[in-house]
Length: 313
Image 1: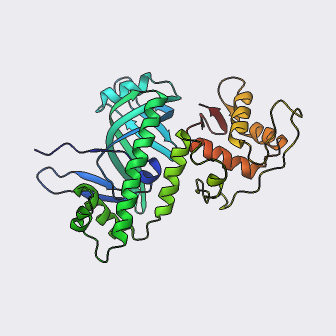
Image 2: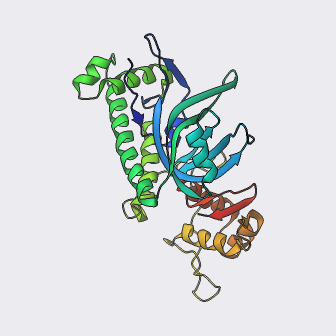
């Protein structure tokens, strides 16, 4: 009888960067998605903000698809007639809501060279912000362990499961790291370290704020995002508008959040063109605005209820 697979804690950026599939041995072989840091994911636990839930089935065959955001990106969850409990939970959930999902990893390849990852949920439960924050801390800890294991493997002339286990790493991680290193070749550990810092900054803002945070290179959330952010706009005197102008060291995210909330007149979200116009009046150009909004999307502070609209969570 096969042992129950561990439910991995993995941020969406690491999971969605995975392209390696592996099938184990035995009478009932288990399929895995192996991440660039060596997590052998068959089952996983995620907690994030359910920003969008779509009903794609009918009364006889219900099927729901959800997007669940963590501070590094978005997971895609799909539940149908064979996951009745999870489907029922998604049908009753009203976005935005904090959701905990335990489920199986899935990969879909519509054509050669293209792979989409999702999660087939076993269980979906609505939780609170404290549960989400705890998951972020635990997932950060697990991710840093995998980064350390991969770094140690990279320094070995011939990486092996046995050598990594001698250093104290568990066998399943050691095996995943060796397979990942052989397959992915050039693995950017700094990228995943930065994603951990971004995640932690959402629950421990004082830890990576101010000058220390600005010294880190910006993580490229979107392909069109410039590698270096433009200089902050000049400070203006208070009282020249309903909100304090953005200045050096000011909280641009807070200003944009306030703008989005103010422009959300009907509860369906703030139109993007009006956000751009309002931000321009605050001396925030469109390039900088896109960077700030991308950061807010990553942190689960805002979401896109429909194309061209932004809504505060």
